[in-house]
Image 1: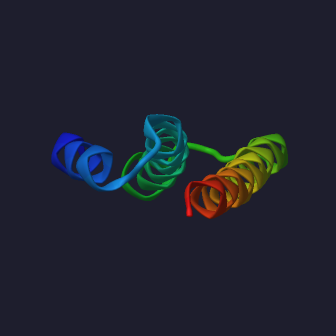
Image 2 (image 1 turned 180 degrees about the horizontal axis):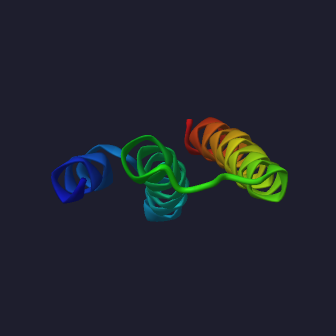
Length: 76
């Protein structure tokens, strides 16, 4: 996980974007693997919260991409 995070930081122009994606991925994978390996219950409330996190991550990334495009246009 840390190796992928570090590589993403080197490639990306925004550390916020990498951090948010990494955190959301870590949250979801940990819960799903906990359910599969340890039979931990995942309630409807958990799924709703996880969907909000993923939706927020998508919205943040699309907004960050728009801002980056606008900055590139201004530089040219």
